[in-house]
Image (cartoon, rainbow, N blue to C red; front, side):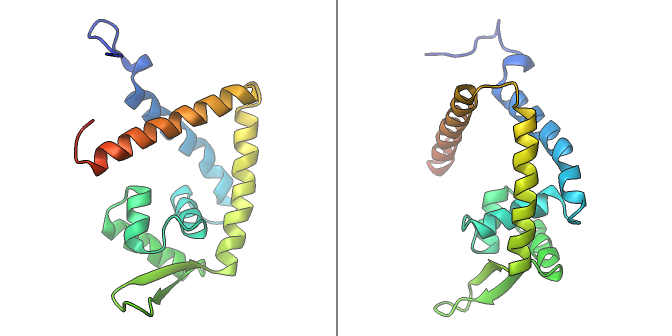
Length: 156
């Protein structure tokens, strides 16, 4: 079943456009949340990825954040210099360098998480819980569809 047609396709109904705009507006709105801690939204996203176990190495982090390896290395360098993460060679494979949040890194990630929660609660104050749950479920479903297409090496 086709969802779009040439006659009714435009930015206001394009999933790609809407996702990009929501991301852009959301990031711009969230940046001030991190100023007090002296970090950027990208640094916080990296800390959260490491803290939650989504990314244990720089390669994992690059995939999770959709960054290139060079940018991710610089990002990890900054996090390490700030005392928020450590690098340690894996004992079973010396080629692997594991990333771990420090206690200070966990603390800053948690303080910012609480501010992010406050931001989203304020943003979604006029939404009911069912709407938010549905939106999250649909976004997760779309992410899964796109992830599976990427894994299978097809454009969907």
